[in-house]
Length: 260
Ligand code: NI
Image 1 (tube, rainbow, N blue to C red):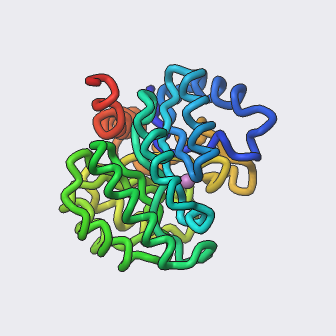
Image 2: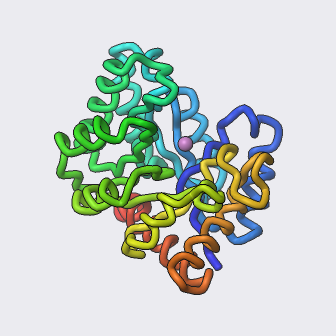
C-alpha cells in the first residue's frame, strides 16, 4: 500500500531532534510521498531543505495567516523566489484564521490575496487553511478563480454546502486526524457525499493526531488511520482508499514537477 501524506510540518520545533528519522520510518511503513507545508519564510526554506534530502518529500512554500503580520512588503519577492524552486510543488499554507486572530484580519486578507495571485501567476496549486473564516475564505477564493493548477482545502472543517462550492471551483478537499474523533459528524457527512477522486489525506503532523493515539505527537505513518476511516465511511477496502487518495495527490501536486 502506497500512502501520500499531503500535509506535514517536519520543520516544526517538535521535530527538531528527530525529523529525519521520523520521515524515514514513515517511508518504511508505506508512506511513499510527503508534502511538507511552509508556514513562514524560514519554515518554507526548511521545507525545501527537507525535500532536497529525501526524494519522496516535496515542499510547499508560503506564509500562514498566523505569521502574516510579520511580513514586510519586499517579502513578496522572497515568496516568489522560494516558489520557483524545482522541489516546490505548491504554494502554502495560506488562508485565514479567525479562531486565533494572531494577525489582524485585514493583514491576513492582504497576504492571502497576494499569495493567491502569485500561485496563479506561477501555475502552482494552493494549500488553503481556513479556520472560522468560511465566508471570507470562500469569497476571496471565488474572486481569484479560476485556478488553473487547482488546490486543496486542508484539514477541512466546513459543511457539505461549502464543500460543494469548492468542488465546483475545481478544488480538492483534505482530511486529517479529526475525522477519527468521536465528534466528527460534520466531516463524516462531507466525506459520505464527496466524490472519491477529490479526496486527499494528511496528518498535519505534529498536530491533530488521529485516534487511538490522540494526545501523542503525530507523524506521517498515522496517515494510514485517516485512510482507514475514509475506507470505512466510503465502504471500500483501505487499499483502495490509499490508492485513490495517493493518485489524487500525485495528480494535484506532482504532475507539474515531473513535466517541468
Ligand atoms: Ni498545517
